[in-house]
Image 1 (cartoon, rainbow, N blue to C red):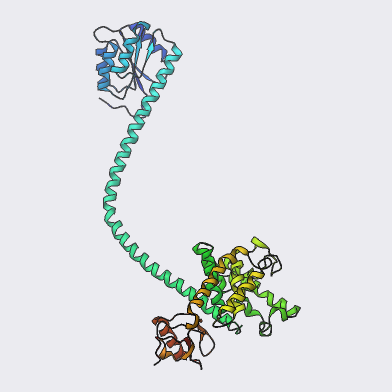
Image 2: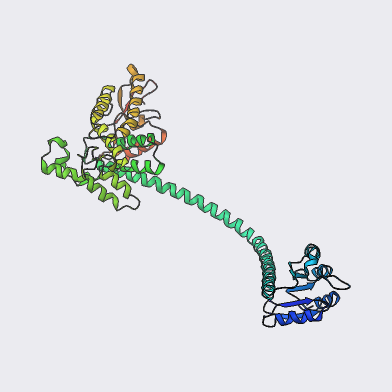
Length: 446
């Protein structure tokens, strides 16, 4: 049996034992783009089914020897995709139902039929057959493609495993390099921060102190890790603009400066932002630096921002900066801390943010409790040489090189890595003085 191709005209088979009915059906569909076939009996119809592929099969129900439902049931076995329709009189509705159930008929058409309805029904049946064929084609195409994909997947599986292992190894290398770059960036920022402090020698380790406090406040405020990192970096660089301020101005306090000197001093916040803004990814950090001298009541500089218009990072650094300047001592006492805390509290309605201060106070109170715990056991300060250093000692003063570069800030607890680093710096650029640490009961000088 030749198979019907997609481009061929759909074939329709009419089966009826009455010749005049077959002629009427052929006339009805002369103007339709179909191939028309007729058969006078179910037997003759089955013979045609063995020779030609049909889109639609229409059979009368009442025929001698073989009824329409019987014929359609057999036709279903020969050409299961063909759409089957049964013609029946009003008295044979039950037979039509049987044709639908047993022969898998698409529907039935009652005699006498309406020509227009009949033509529309056949058109719909042809469309249904076309959809079935297209679905079969797509299903077969999908099956073939899936088989091809299985083959490709099998061939690629080994390559993918090798490439995955190679990528994993490269990712480990990249992670290591990224960690080194991040560490180098942080060290570069700290070195730059140390160079800034060489301009304002009256404030020992100020940027590092402010950075440590700001980070603790940011954590207490539950800022995200990226936000906390921005605050930390901004705190380290918050005074970078002072590089452009004259030494004469930096030696004074703001309340002793004349109008011109105050203008020069206040420009450092803007200069700091400009210096930082050129670094990719540091724009938000630059904004924090610009506004760290703004006041809640709008009396600060450089832009006179108020309340929440001031970036949160700037409000954090403002408190940490003011607190460290109020202490400005290597080993602050409990009285020093309480006085600084009271001074900040006094300016809450004008300069500082209540919300930020509420997260800052517990940090200072924790330090006060630590001092109370030590009480009379506070260790005295002792000067030692690099060779006498040992893990566990606490620095009581900043460690600076002979040329004034800050190596390590006071308060650090030494471990063996830090001890080795200090000893190496002292060989390269040794200062005149030794290293000042807290003298503990376990310390034994060499």
